[in-house]
Image 1 (cartoon, rainbow, N blue to C red):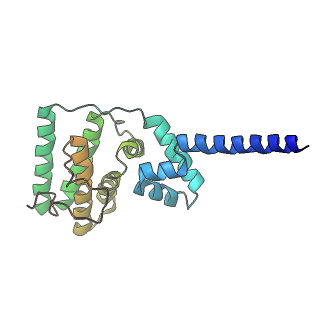
Image 2: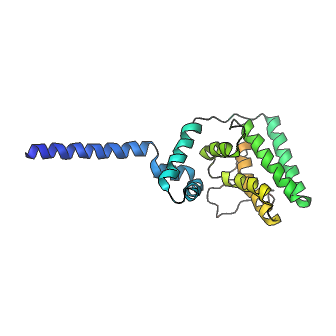
Image 3: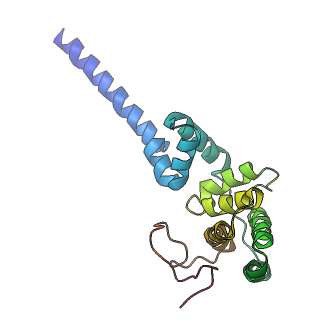
Length: 197
């Protein structure tokens, strides 16, 4: 009987270890939290605190969009996008709403040109972007919603500044001082996204 108990305990232990290894390999909750950062918390909140539902959604995003490879941009295309962003920043002074609407459209086109879904549905495009650029996706969402909600000039400015991080990553212009996962630190860019010194 003692041998039977030892065998049963051993089988149970192997099953438990196998379960945790499979969960760790698939990312599990901790892997998803690490991969998605603030996007994880946003998704949990959208699911009313139901972490299992949020994790299912995030795991599905990874399954659908995880193998997406971003297409490179030609130097000419990069320069054209950078020039367009500069015009958007200049336009903001006299017409904040128009500038933010243009930034929203420009980010959608840039994401498409890099190989993300076309944006036929904003949610589909942001879901794919969140898999690859979870730290920067919130600014794009803010720009998109600010355009539709009639936000104040200050809200529009904040949205445009935050959206710059995704723009830089997609453009391939991501020096360490620009894109920082620790949102508490400042970078070398002013409120309009220009380098301050």
